[in-house]
Image (cartoon, rainbow, N blue to C red; front, side, top):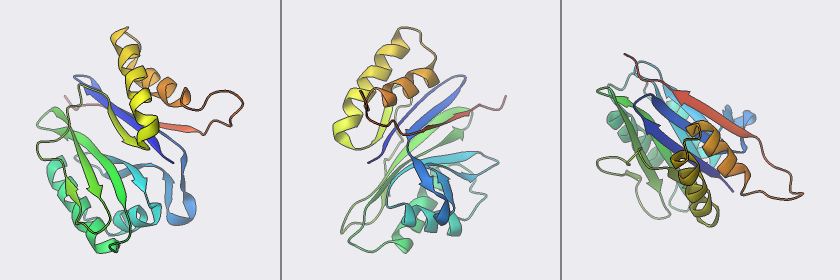
Length: 179
């Protein structure tokens, strides 16, 4: 089960996701750095073995977040069979603006990404739907109450694992817009 959240504003893109990656697959976190210059990262869910293949074969140096999302879709299709699923949020800055694309690779379909991107002024969820709707609501309310965006995302994820349950680690990343 994966639960990740992302939000962006004029000062940065804030990413948080529960659970660790699989170091044996060369993915230490479910926040995967795809490239630098421009910086592009992905919050990933679904089969991590497929994301490991994407990372290993990704052509760095894509000129934009849009092109990076296209490359991720291409690599997912090459790395997966029809019986598997993988989902992600590909994020970075494009033309000075925060951009995020939702990538979906469902069973029996080709990978695709959201045309036009996602609205990063609103909390974007990733993962198990039974968990992300309440977490998205909790983070949105905390941010409206002037809570630091990153702290709001982390607390919203942690609240989905209440009581004596062992809380998974929450991995975070802040991407800053280059001035």
